[in-house]
Image (cartoon, rainbow, N blue to C red):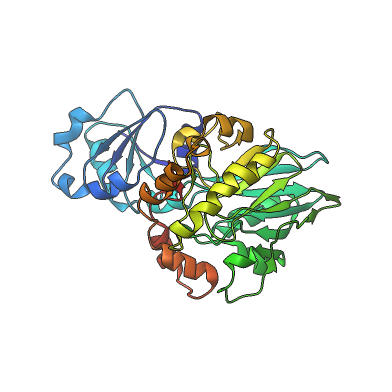
Length: 375
Protein backbone atom coordinates (compact mmCIF):
# COMPACT_ATOMS: atom_id res chain seq x y z
CA UNK A 1 0.00 0.00 0.00
CA UNK A 2 1.07 3.63 0.39
CA UNK A 3 3.27 5.54 2.83
CA UNK A 4 2.43 9.24 3.04
CA UNK A 5 4.14 12.14 4.75
CA UNK A 6 2.04 14.27 7.11
CA UNK A 7 3.38 17.68 8.13
CA UNK A 8 3.00 19.38 11.50
CA UNK A 9 0.78 21.95 9.79
CA UNK A 10 -1.54 19.22 8.50
CA UNK A 11 -1.79 17.63 11.95
CA UNK A 12 -2.50 21.05 13.47
CA UNK A 13 -5.38 21.58 11.04
CA UNK A 14 -6.82 18.21 12.08
CA UNK A 15 -6.69 19.34 15.72
CA UNK A 16 -8.36 22.68 14.90
CA UNK A 17 -11.06 20.93 12.83
CA UNK A 18 -11.58 18.20 15.46
CA UNK A 19 -10.95 15.46 12.91
CA UNK A 20 -10.29 11.84 13.75
CA UNK A 21 -6.75 10.47 13.66
CA UNK A 22 -5.16 7.30 14.99
CA UNK A 23 -1.59 7.82 16.22
CA UNK A 24 0.88 4.97 16.58
CA UNK A 25 3.61 6.48 18.76
CA UNK A 26 6.78 4.37 18.68
CA UNK A 27 8.73 6.30 21.31
CA UNK A 28 9.49 4.84 24.75
CA UNK A 29 6.49 4.63 27.06
CA UNK A 30 7.88 7.22 29.51
CA UNK A 31 8.32 9.77 26.70
CA UNK A 32 4.81 9.09 25.40
CA UNK A 33 3.25 9.41 28.86
CA UNK A 34 5.08 12.67 29.48
CA UNK A 35 4.22 14.35 26.19
CA UNK A 36 2.25 13.43 23.09
CA UNK A 37 0.31 14.96 20.22
CA UNK A 38 -3.13 15.79 21.56
CA UNK A 39 -6.39 16.10 19.66
CA UNK A 40 -9.99 15.97 20.80
CA UNK A 41 -10.78 13.05 18.47
CA UNK A 42 -7.38 11.36 18.39
CA UNK A 43 -6.83 7.76 19.46
CA UNK A 44 -3.45 6.33 20.44
CA UNK A 45 -1.37 3.21 20.54
CA UNK A 46 2.09 3.37 22.09
CA UNK A 47 4.44 0.56 21.09
CA UNK A 48 8.17 1.31 21.48
CA UNK A 49 10.06 0.93 18.22
CA UNK A 50 12.43 -1.70 19.57
CA UNK A 51 9.46 -4.02 20.12
CA UNK A 52 8.69 -3.86 16.39
CA UNK A 53 12.15 -4.66 15.03
CA UNK A 54 11.09 -8.21 14.18
CA UNK A 55 7.90 -7.12 12.44
CA UNK A 56 4.48 -5.53 12.93
CA UNK A 57 2.33 -8.64 12.62
CA UNK A 58 1.60 -8.66 16.34
CA UNK A 59 -0.07 -5.22 16.29
CA UNK A 60 -2.00 -5.36 13.01
CA UNK A 61 -5.24 -6.20 14.80
CA UNK A 62 -4.84 -2.99 16.88
CA UNK A 63 -4.49 -0.70 13.85
CA UNK A 64 -7.84 0.57 12.51
CA UNK A 65 -8.61 0.40 8.81
CA UNK A 66 -11.37 3.02 8.88
CA UNK A 67 -9.24 5.95 10.12
CA UNK A 68 -6.13 7.78 9.01
CA UNK A 69 -3.12 6.32 10.80
CA UNK A 70 -0.07 8.42 11.69
CA UNK A 71 3.19 6.92 12.95
CA UNK A 72 5.17 9.22 15.25
CA UNK A 73 8.66 9.02 16.74
CA UNK A 74 11.22 11.44 18.16
CA UNK A 75 13.02 12.53 14.97
CA UNK A 76 11.25 10.75 12.07
CA UNK A 77 13.58 7.85 11.24
CA UNK A 78 11.94 5.14 13.33
CA UNK A 79 8.46 6.13 12.22
CA UNK A 80 9.46 5.86 8.55
CA UNK A 81 10.67 2.29 9.09
CA UNK A 82 7.53 1.27 11.00
CA UNK A 83 5.32 2.96 8.38
CA UNK A 84 7.11 0.99 5.66
CA UNK A 85 6.49 -2.28 7.49
CA UNK A 86 2.79 -1.47 7.98
CA UNK A 87 2.52 -0.51 4.32
CA UNK A 88 4.05 -3.83 3.28
CA UNK A 89 1.39 -5.49 5.45
CA UNK A 90 -1.30 -3.84 3.33
CA UNK A 91 -2.13 -0.64 5.22
CA UNK A 92 -2.18 2.96 4.03
CA UNK A 93 0.00 4.81 6.54
CA UNK A 94 1.45 8.27 7.17
CA UNK A 95 4.42 9.30 9.26
CA UNK A 96 5.04 12.67 10.92
CA UNK A 97 7.62 14.68 9.02
CA UNK A 98 10.46 15.57 11.39
CA UNK A 99 8.94 13.69 14.30
CA UNK A 100 8.29 15.23 17.69
CA UNK A 101 11.33 17.47 17.24
CA UNK A 102 9.54 19.37 14.49
CA UNK A 103 6.19 19.09 16.28
CA UNK A 104 7.69 20.93 19.25
CA UNK A 105 8.75 23.83 17.04
CA UNK A 106 5.77 24.33 14.74
CA UNK A 107 3.90 27.66 14.95
CA UNK A 108 0.45 28.18 13.42
CA UNK A 109 -0.58 31.85 12.99
CA UNK A 110 -4.27 32.52 13.64
CA UNK A 111 -6.02 35.89 13.38
CA UNK A 112 -7.62 36.84 16.70
CA UNK A 113 -9.39 40.00 15.62
CA UNK A 114 -9.25 43.56 14.36
CA UNK A 115 -8.11 46.78 15.99
CA UNK A 116 -10.20 49.93 16.08
CA UNK A 117 -7.94 51.83 13.67
CA UNK A 118 -7.73 49.18 10.99
CA UNK A 119 -5.01 46.92 12.36
CA UNK A 120 -5.10 43.27 13.40
CA UNK A 121 -3.81 41.01 16.12
CA UNK A 122 -2.53 37.52 15.39
CA UNK A 123 -1.85 34.63 17.76
CA UNK A 124 0.93 32.15 16.96
CA UNK A 125 -0.05 28.77 18.40
CA UNK A 126 2.90 26.54 19.22
CA UNK A 127 0.61 23.56 19.25
CA UNK A 128 3.13 20.95 20.41
CA UNK A 129 4.47 23.01 23.31
CA UNK A 130 1.48 25.06 24.42
CA UNK A 131 3.25 28.39 23.89
CA UNK A 132 1.31 31.37 22.54
CA UNK A 133 2.87 34.48 21.05
CA UNK A 134 1.39 37.52 19.35
CA UNK A 135 1.84 40.02 16.55
CA UNK A 136 -0.01 43.34 16.70
CA UNK A 137 -0.18 45.03 13.29
CA UNK A 138 -1.15 48.61 12.49
CA UNK A 139 -0.39 50.96 9.57
CA UNK A 140 2.56 48.99 8.21
CA UNK A 141 4.22 48.34 11.57
CA UNK A 142 4.14 45.46 14.03
CA UNK A 143 4.86 44.58 17.63
CA UNK A 144 5.69 41.05 18.81
CA UNK A 145 4.86 39.74 22.27
CA UNK A 146 6.44 36.62 23.84
CA UNK A 147 8.09 35.43 20.63
CA UNK A 148 9.64 31.96 20.60
CA UNK A 149 13.11 31.16 19.24
CA UNK A 150 11.60 30.19 15.84
CA UNK A 151 12.22 33.74 14.69
CA UNK A 152 11.96 33.14 10.94
CA UNK A 153 8.26 32.35 11.29
CA UNK A 154 7.56 35.86 12.61
CA UNK A 155 9.90 37.60 10.18
CA UNK A 156 8.40 35.80 7.18
CA UNK A 157 4.85 36.48 8.40
CA UNK A 158 5.64 40.18 8.78
CA UNK A 159 7.10 40.21 5.26
CA UNK A 160 3.98 38.48 3.95
CA UNK A 161 1.81 41.19 5.55
CA UNK A 162 4.15 43.92 4.31
CA UNK A 163 4.82 45.29 7.80
CA UNK A 164 8.00 46.19 9.69
CA UNK A 165 8.61 44.82 13.18
CA UNK A 166 9.26 47.87 15.37
CA UNK A 167 8.89 46.54 18.92
CA UNK A 168 9.44 43.18 20.62
CA UNK A 169 8.16 42.51 24.15
CA UNK A 170 8.53 39.72 26.67
CA UNK A 171 5.88 39.80 29.38
CA UNK A 172 8.41 38.21 31.76
CA UNK A 173 11.67 36.28 31.84
CA UNK A 174 10.55 32.93 30.45
CA UNK A 175 11.56 29.68 32.14
CA UNK A 176 9.94 27.05 29.93
CA UNK A 177 11.04 28.17 26.47
CA UNK A 178 13.81 30.20 24.91
CA UNK A 179 12.73 33.68 23.89
CA UNK A 180 13.36 34.90 20.36
CA UNK A 181 12.88 38.52 21.36
CA UNK A 182 16.50 39.58 21.59
CA UNK A 183 17.52 37.90 18.31
CA UNK A 184 14.53 39.35 16.45
CA UNK A 185 15.48 42.77 17.79
CA UNK A 186 19.03 42.34 16.53
CA UNK A 187 17.88 41.18 13.08
CA UNK A 188 15.17 43.78 12.52
CA UNK A 189 16.35 46.78 14.53
CA UNK A 190 13.21 46.63 16.66
CA UNK A 191 13.29 47.81 20.26
CA UNK A 192 13.37 44.95 22.76
CA UNK A 193 11.38 45.53 25.94
CA UNK A 194 11.70 43.60 29.21
CA UNK A 195 10.30 44.17 32.71
CA UNK A 196 13.28 45.59 34.62
CA UNK A 197 12.55 43.58 37.77
CA UNK A 198 13.03 40.41 35.70
CA UNK A 199 16.13 41.77 33.99
CA UNK A 200 18.49 42.43 36.90
CA UNK A 201 20.90 39.73 35.67
CA UNK A 202 20.63 40.09 31.89
CA UNK A 203 23.82 40.71 29.96
CA UNK A 204 22.37 42.82 27.13
CA UNK A 205 20.69 46.18 26.58
CA UNK A 206 16.91 46.46 26.64
CA UNK A 207 14.12 48.99 27.02
CA UNK A 208 12.58 48.88 30.52
CA UNK A 209 8.94 47.90 30.38
CA UNK A 210 7.25 49.64 33.26
CA UNK A 211 3.75 50.41 34.45
CA UNK A 212 2.21 53.09 32.26
CA UNK A 213 4.24 52.62 29.07
CA UNK A 214 2.25 53.34 25.91
CA UNK A 215 3.81 52.29 22.63
CA UNK A 216 2.84 53.60 19.21
CA UNK A 217 2.65 51.14 16.34
CA UNK A 218 2.20 52.63 12.88
CA UNK A 219 0.58 56.01 12.64
CA UNK A 220 -1.82 55.49 15.51
CA UNK A 221 -1.59 54.65 19.17
CA UNK A 222 -2.92 51.20 19.84
CA UNK A 223 -2.53 51.65 23.57
CA UNK A 224 -0.34 48.84 24.80
CA UNK A 225 -0.54 49.62 28.49
CA UNK A 226 1.88 47.75 30.69
CA UNK A 227 0.20 46.62 33.90
CA UNK A 228 2.62 45.55 36.61
CA UNK A 229 1.23 42.14 37.54
CA UNK A 230 3.74 40.16 39.61
CA UNK A 231 3.17 36.59 40.67
CA UNK A 232 4.57 34.24 38.05
CA UNK A 233 7.81 36.22 38.16
CA UNK A 234 8.57 39.37 40.13
CA UNK A 235 8.38 41.47 36.96
CA UNK A 236 5.48 39.78 35.15
CA UNK A 237 3.73 42.40 33.03
CA UNK A 238 0.37 42.38 31.25
CA UNK A 239 -0.68 44.40 28.22
CA UNK A 240 -4.02 45.93 27.33
CA UNK A 241 -4.08 46.37 23.56
CA UNK A 242 -6.53 48.78 21.95
CA UNK A 243 -8.79 48.59 25.01
CA UNK A 244 -9.99 45.22 23.66
CA UNK A 245 -7.34 42.60 24.38
CA UNK A 246 -5.58 41.60 27.61
CA UNK A 247 -2.28 39.84 27.00
CA UNK A 248 -1.85 38.17 30.37
CA UNK A 249 1.51 36.47 29.91
CA UNK A 250 1.84 33.55 32.32
CA UNK A 251 -0.28 35.14 35.05
CA UNK A 252 -3.71 33.99 33.88
CA UNK A 253 -4.64 31.18 31.50
CA UNK A 254 -8.02 30.07 30.21
CA UNK A 255 -8.34 27.01 32.44
CA UNK A 256 -5.68 27.72 35.07
CA UNK A 257 -3.41 30.31 36.66
CA UNK A 258 0.33 30.89 36.62
CA UNK A 259 2.73 29.08 38.91
CA UNK A 260 4.92 31.25 41.16
CA UNK A 261 7.83 28.87 41.76
CA UNK A 262 10.10 28.96 38.70
CA UNK A 263 12.58 31.29 40.35
CA UNK A 264 12.39 29.45 43.68
CA UNK A 265 10.11 32.10 45.17
CA UNK A 266 6.75 30.36 45.55
CA UNK A 267 6.23 31.33 49.20
CA UNK A 268 7.36 34.90 48.57
CA UNK A 269 5.35 35.51 45.41
CA UNK A 270 2.06 33.77 46.13
CA UNK A 271 0.70 36.95 47.71
CA UNK A 272 1.66 38.98 44.64
CA UNK A 273 -0.04 36.43 42.41
CA UNK A 274 -3.26 36.66 44.40
CA UNK A 275 -3.23 40.46 44.41
CA UNK A 276 -2.75 40.55 40.64
CA UNK A 277 -5.55 38.10 39.94
CA UNK A 278 -8.02 39.19 42.61
CA UNK A 279 -7.42 42.96 42.70
CA UNK A 280 -5.54 44.34 39.69
CA UNK A 281 -7.40 42.26 37.12
CA UNK A 282 -10.74 42.95 38.85
CA UNK A 283 -10.23 46.63 38.06
CA UNK A 284 -10.13 45.88 34.31
CA UNK A 285 -13.10 45.65 31.97
CA UNK A 286 -14.68 42.21 31.96
CA UNK A 287 -15.16 42.63 28.20
CA UNK A 288 -11.42 42.36 27.56
CA UNK A 289 -10.45 39.27 25.59
CA UNK A 290 -7.77 37.41 27.57
CA UNK A 291 -4.86 36.21 25.42
CA UNK A 292 -2.42 34.18 27.54
CA UNK A 293 1.18 33.17 26.79
CA UNK A 294 0.37 29.46 27.15
CA UNK A 295 -2.38 26.90 27.08
CA UNK A 296 -2.28 23.75 29.17
CA UNK A 297 -4.87 21.39 27.66
CA UNK A 298 -6.21 21.01 24.13
CA UNK A 299 -9.73 21.80 25.36
CA UNK A 300 -8.67 25.46 25.72
CA UNK A 301 -8.60 25.89 21.93
CA UNK A 302 -11.62 27.60 20.43
CA UNK A 303 -13.27 26.36 17.24
CA UNK A 304 -11.17 28.75 15.14
CA UNK A 305 -7.92 27.55 16.71
CA UNK A 306 -7.39 30.56 18.98
CA UNK A 307 -6.87 30.38 22.72
CA UNK A 308 -8.90 33.29 24.07
CA UNK A 309 -11.78 34.06 26.41
CA UNK A 310 -13.40 37.17 27.89
CA UNK A 311 -12.11 38.19 31.30
CA UNK A 312 -15.63 38.18 32.75
CA UNK A 313 -16.08 34.56 31.66
CA UNK A 314 -12.85 33.58 33.39
CA UNK A 315 -13.93 35.32 36.58
CA UNK A 316 -17.01 33.10 36.49
CA UNK A 317 -15.46 29.80 35.38
CA UNK A 318 -11.73 29.67 36.15
CA UNK A 319 -11.28 27.88 39.48
CA UNK A 320 -8.07 29.78 40.23
CA UNK A 321 -10.02 33.06 40.25
CA UNK A 322 -12.68 31.81 42.66
CA UNK A 323 -10.87 30.74 45.82
CA UNK A 324 -12.10 33.07 48.54
CA UNK A 325 -9.91 31.67 51.30
CA UNK A 326 -6.35 33.00 51.05
CA UNK A 327 -4.88 29.99 52.85
CA UNK A 328 -6.58 27.63 50.38
CA UNK A 329 -5.27 29.71 47.49
CA UNK A 330 -1.74 29.63 48.90
CA UNK A 331 -1.95 25.86 49.30
CA UNK A 332 -3.10 25.44 45.70
CA UNK A 333 -0.19 27.34 44.20
CA UNK A 334 2.56 26.12 46.51
CA UNK A 335 1.67 22.48 47.20
CA UNK A 336 -0.14 21.29 44.07
CA UNK A 337 2.43 22.28 41.48
CA UNK A 338 3.11 20.15 38.41
CA UNK A 339 6.68 19.03 37.64
CA UNK A 340 8.90 21.94 36.71
CA UNK A 341 9.73 22.47 33.02
CA UNK A 342 12.70 20.61 31.59
CA UNK A 343 15.99 22.50 32.03
CA UNK A 344 14.14 25.58 33.28
CA UNK A 345 17.20 27.00 35.04
CA UNK A 346 19.26 26.71 31.87
CA UNK A 347 16.42 28.27 29.89
CA UNK A 348 16.33 31.21 32.30
CA UNK A 349 20.10 31.66 31.97
CA UNK A 350 19.80 31.53 28.17
CA UNK A 351 17.13 34.21 28.26
CA UNK A 352 19.39 36.31 30.48
CA UNK A 353 22.21 36.00 27.94
CA UNK A 354 24.44 34.16 30.43
CA UNK A 355 24.80 31.02 28.30
CA UNK A 356 24.53 30.48 24.55
CA UNK A 357 23.55 26.87 23.79
CA UNK A 358 23.65 25.69 20.17
CA UNK A 359 20.47 24.76 18.29
CA UNK A 360 20.54 21.07 19.23
CA UNK A 361 21.00 21.99 22.89
CA UNK A 362 18.13 24.50 22.70
CA UNK A 363 15.85 21.86 21.23
CA UNK A 364 16.77 19.39 23.95
CA UNK A 365 16.19 21.99 26.67
CA UNK A 366 12.67 22.71 25.41
CA UNK A 367 11.45 19.16 24.76
CA UNK A 368 8.30 18.33 26.68
CA UNK A 369 4.90 19.83 27.54
CA UNK A 370 3.97 23.24 28.90
CA UNK A 371 4.30 23.28 32.70
CA UNK A 372 3.66 26.93 33.54
CA UNK A 373 0.21 26.49 35.03
CA UNK A 374 -1.55 25.49 38.25
CA UNK A 375 -4.96 23.82 37.93
